[in-house]
Length: 92
Image (cartoon, rainbow, N blue to C red; front, side):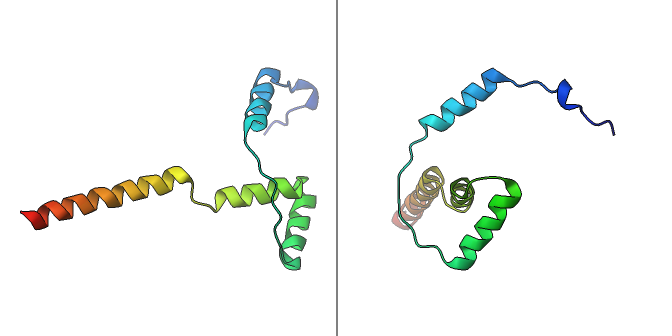
């Protein structure tokens, strides 16, 4: 497999600007949380290994492991539709 030379790489400045713009538009809140020492040590090791900031790693973990509002709304709609069907069956 041929290795790419660093001199042959180019930066897509337009795509980078779009990505930075999306990130800047994301609404962020400042919060205070309590994290146990072992979790903080683990984040520290990941941060050093991946060369990412703690905040970036923590935000990513929260996003991956949470239910998005759209998913919650979709589930609620499904349950409401099923409830309507059951009510119709009972009324008939």
